[in-house]
Length: 323
Image (cartoon, rainbow, N blue to C red; front, side, top):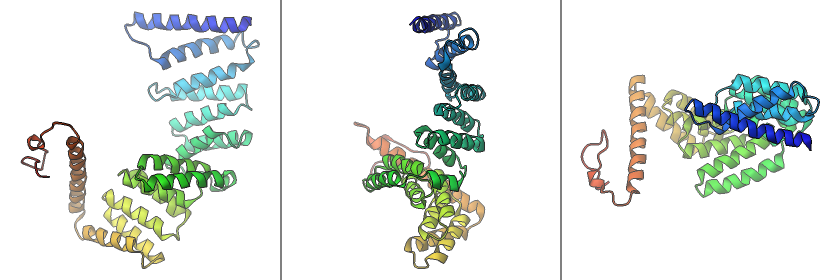
């Protein structure tokens, strides 16, 4: 009880101190700043006389690591230091490994982050934060260990998320579909269909860089599946990478010579690749600008009372009435 009173009193005192410090500097403290100051002060105390009385102090280091890991704070090395100390204090506490993996991910130490996640999964194979962190690594382009992924896969849970994602996709709920397919990938990143499906949803959102990443994962996992090459070609085309699009379509047609989608992609790509690289780039930039203008027009049309005849867009000339 006395320790509980001490900790509550310490927290209140630290809040007052932090606000006084920021008030003197004429700066309003953020929530993360307050938390870091409180955790820093408490961790300093626990490392000395109170260490023996507060065996749970590893949580304080984990909490401060979480604060440091906020992108607005940009103190990722300190987050990693605290997370390492947390694990040293409580090597069987799985959340400490999630904190360490998060810091390593933010520092772009992807191989280290994967190793940390695997160490945490050895303690608790079903810990959701570690599963999510591993998917973040893949989404950053890191290839996680396929054998480890196969061993830890939960195919039943993955299939359920995929089914819900398919329903959302059919209803044109692209954001929801992306989340659900991402969930499926967290449970089983070894299924090429999940990567293909999320690539399709991302393409519908015109997020072609991420659609390309997922298509590449899909083709790597299932190089003899023609549909994966169609996902790849579609993303490459919309990124203006027409020669690569042409090759992806050709590679897919070697597997399925009658695939109509790939035939169409090949025809579209060849209309571009007959031009010089400079012309290809100009055409791509023109299409990107047209898409941006269309999005702007669609947004403006939804503004009540706006007379579209008075709206002018760069490069289009004249009024927009009648479009």
